[in-house]
Amino acid sequence: MAFVSGAGGGIGRECVKQLVRGGCTRVFATDIKESALEETVSVAKRLNSKANIDTEVADISRPEVIDALISRAVQSFGRVDYGFNIAGLSVVRLLFPWGFVS
Image (cartoon, rainbow, N blue to C red; front, side, top):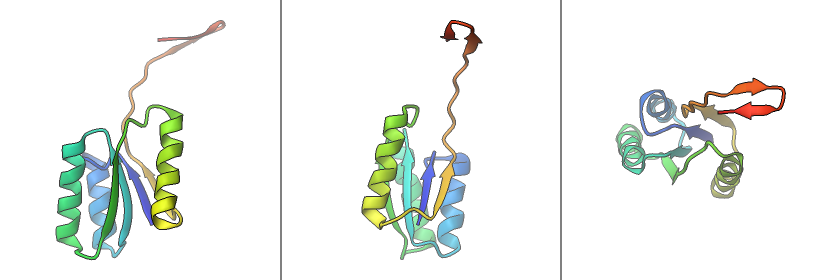
């Protein structure tokens, strides 16, 4: 069972495609863009009709969201064997002695 964040496009979509091409039939895919995620599922199903792909539209910039997604993946498939954290996060902060400043 593979967990893929950022599965809606680019490297994330390619990871899902390679996984199902290689015979992986259980994938939990997440992305912030619903339509892109749906397209990934459509492409993956054409590559491997036996693929069972569960999805969740989510913003993984918050740790509690990541925890909930992993829990949902385990609930859906029983375990997570592989994790691909492909979602791109862009956060620029400078560390000062009194804390972080955005």
